[in-house]
Image (cartoon, rainbow, N blue to C red; front, side, top):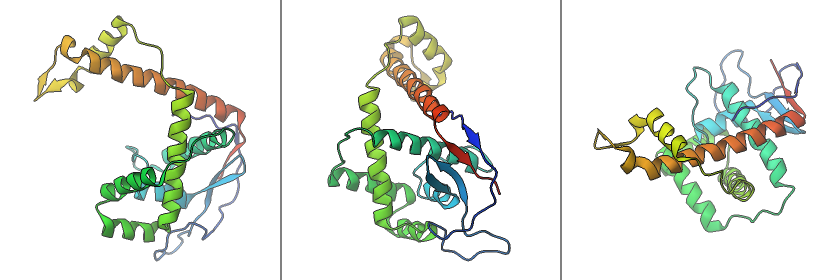
Length: 214
């Protein structure tokens, strides 16, 4: 999602152990520092690391993913602020357990999961809180943006041609007739995401978002 930060303030780096890594530091390393303040909510460098190491966010294709992940966390906080203004059903214990199981599986099993928790300074309860927030965001967005407009037949055909390499069966390209319904679903999802991105950009323009530089 694109984000437009409304204010950029240069501040000195801040050391903090609140959510920092619990691993030996090299010379000159900072335990932690503030990267952004979003409507009074602080986002730390350790938050970025935790989301990456716990695979709560797709790792960007960049040599240093920090800035891109920070943008995603800024947007996440802005959406959470919106969620807090409305009544959104709490996820059930079963839903949280299922989401947690997916995280454990992505990381490589219980042992690897426990190691990553120690590295990023999270407890299992910390992670469950993050997953709870994610589920509430999903419910809010599903209610606010239940669907996008239905794409026209020409738009679906154009999408199919632009992504034709994605529509294959055992390595053999599918015909449009075979792939049409799948192409329509994907295009509809893309149009819905564009609506969400535009809405999120509007939140960013109206918000007090401070970036902190070293």
